[in-house]
Image (cartoon, rainbow, N blue to C red; front, side, top):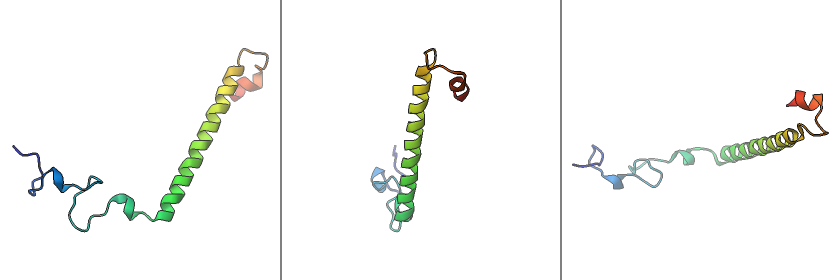
Length: 78
């Protein structure tokens, strides 16, 4: 019993990126313009930063519930 591909290759017929090792194959990451990839990374990082800042703000607001800082405005914002 063989677990290799139908074309006769075995486990060794795949390259480091998991794709076929036949000539002419490029991993998906190398097909993207490096500038576009950098913009994507920066945009993703900025979004993660905003999410973390909003979570911190939400946690701070939640800790104010049932304290002297608890107001109707606080409850409306939550």
